[in-house]
Length: 428
Image (cartoon, rainbow, N blue to C red; front, top):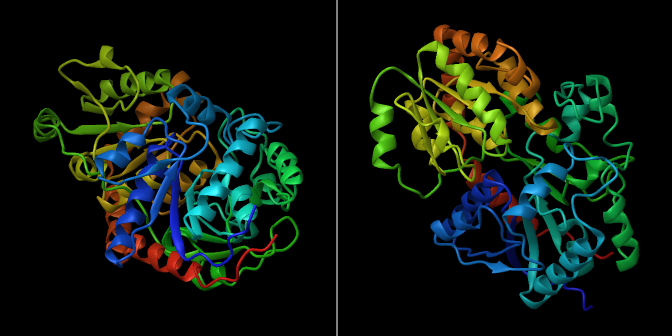
């Protein structure tokens, strides 16, 4: 393959198994367009491909298409929640995606590839000599670990059981890297040295405010990789990055939000349906009404005069009108709640979400509990009651929201991506 080391095009590659990553790529797309740059968009396709269409974004399918079932399996097997001896992709998939993406980059003279969890890009960008920008690691970056700020994982399936290991192990082990490294050797590109390196790009966007992280931006951006990381990796703090989905608020949802008593918004979009049902049943004894973002789940049986089940909703329009948000703790949903000044109850499903909800809890704007406790104890009811009745949580969320209002995260991300075109070319 002819290596493309002189291209100046930009390609966004959202993994459409994730509403969060698809919507964040939409925000970056809009910010680049506002700079007069129209990036190409390429994807495997999948569950939330429709969000790209709703945003009016033209895109190409590259490599073997993923359907909803394959996307659901990817979510189960993804790094941090799946078994550590696999790589979320089969070897055949990784080979096909790496070759197809590299050919696409070369054909379209791409200089920078930007992805939200399309991890095949760690191979394809090396094969094509393209710089890789990532945003999916969110706040889960090395300077946080070096300060010991990662919490103990909450999932009973987690391969790490303590905060000490959570902070020290990721850069020292190759969990989830086996398939990537088999195909890397086959294609003649560098191997992935650790699971921490797997989720970092040549330039990694740190999509949170330093005040929330508890680490100064200068310290994060001056970090340099040591053992366990690729030497070219750099970090850039760009600030909050969350969705403003271009879908209208349905009239029935608008009416539901306008009535009494207060509404709790449940948006655990990547969870099993059983968890959502348990959460709704735990909230009802508090006398609230519940709005559920059902997305792809069939939860119609929950609906009654106090529970409304909707599909994909524009959370940035819902959160300001909710008394409490209950989410899995993905960075986008956490930031949407904070920007609205709405307290958060997080039920994290994997380690990056553990960190997001812990950061908010440290700032006094929310609480979190494990999926196990959410489904087997009365703790969710008690925590939700506390969040609804203690005004300190809403006040703290409002303070974070005021901070976010001073930061244009998408614009900062666009600037960083354009700067990425000036990085030295990648020559394996």
